[in-house]
Length: 225
Length: 225
DNA sequence: GCCAATCTTGCAGGCTCTGCAAACTTTTAT
DNA sequence: ATAAAAGTTTGCAGAGCCTGCAAGATTGGC
Image (tube, rainbow over all chains, first blue to last red; front, side, top):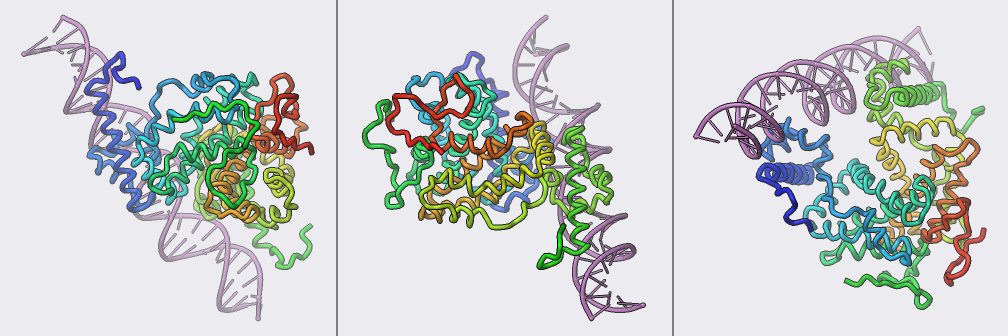
């Protein structure tokens, strides 16, 4: 969104972003080919044409290069969640608040699919993905607390943030192995619907998204798009 | 205590368990005192009175010593879940299936509280705890799949396993900072009830476990125990 | 007591990651 | 344009993690 920011990026920062991207790309490619433990930082740096020491100016650990840099900023989940009308059930409200981030991921589809494939074949990396979601989790806790009026150190906000995070991660992992045309947002929606209806077991007959309920739902903001 | 089991443990294996426990205890104590990054494997080994090399015969990494060894076996979650009567809603059934493990943790209360405190003050360890839950997660996926009749690679079993795992972890973290008399099982029950009712927001007034809602909700299969 | 299996230990070595200080490059001010 | 300031890259030294290997030390079975 923020196209021309107040302070123009400048040639220097552009080059930094470029180097960072090159390092991540090289790391992902090499690890995808050979496996995490058969790639050294030296090789990654070499492939990105910088010195090994420079690698560590960008990433604290080898694994960090695989997960990638910090998400862009923009309005935080916190603000977005509070912007959702009060009548909307929490899980659905969280879905709406996260939608822009999901769109970002979908926009970088290729990198993310590669990244998720790498994580799948190197299970030791999965915890790193969790850690990445954690900073967002902190914020989500605060956001849920603000929305519900509950204290941030009570059970509900923490539970909501962690389980929603887990549902999101599960959706991503499924997206990584789904058919070509499937969009991440649809999987997340499906997962959140199941979560929002208390993990009641779907009938094994169908496997499409089931609208939870026929009639008695009054508030249905149906976020089409 | 250990009378004569089918395969008698033997003096040797007993000593191994002892060494393992000593290493974990030393690791937890030192890291609790100084922080993860200010304790070396050499120091842990020293405190447990073995050589540094021996440390790595027991644990693959320094962090592993903190999390501790593999859980004892016994009937798996898989079997226990299938033993729960079919009418019981999934989340509640999972609670029952996990109860023995929860009791095990409660029985080792002191070690676990220390361990959780260490994890809290060294966030880089949290992913390790997640990883530990992961093997159980694999099994939970299979169990849920078996119980529901859904394929194990479909969304629902995966979602159920990951979110329930997240809820369990959240309960543990809260237990770690709860008042003296609180039992883990009660926190897990509370979390699972919230999860099973779709994360509907409790009214902010009370902070006890609340039956969700007074009036305007038609569809509420109030799980009144 | 003796053999075989197992466990412990030291050693060498590769890899990750950090602090430091010397180039080097871009930006800013003159 | 030129010089100073600010920021970046790099090499080097070194601590610490972790592994493979082979030589001792223990233990269990006969």
